[in-house]
Amino acid sequence: MPYKEREIEKKYYSIGEVGEMFKVAPSLIRYWEGEFDIIRPKKDKKGNRRYTKDDIQKIRYVYHLVKEKGYTLQGAQEVIAAGKTQGFDKVAAVQKLQEIKDFLINLKNELKARNRS
Image (cartoon, rainbow, N blue to C red):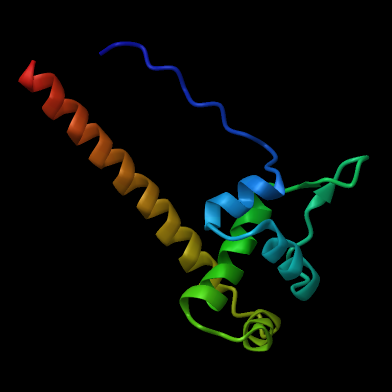
């Protein structure tokens, strides 16, 4: 099997990159930051937000509650305040399973292409 270089994993993501991940405007991410105490990205000297994987997981949970489950902002805040973080864990698990599925599909397609040639 040929050597395959590992993808470099980023430590910090810009607000634009995070917006692209969820297909939402950066202004919505900034708005959620003001509405949800769990979203607190680091800021550099210029004031640019720098999101970690942990921050992105928290945004994913808010996104799941608001956009996928249909909670109002107040309803999502109440779920989070009530400490119902098992939902956060489930969202993270589903995301990881999706990544594994995508990896396996790509691997399958590569093997099919290799067998044809």
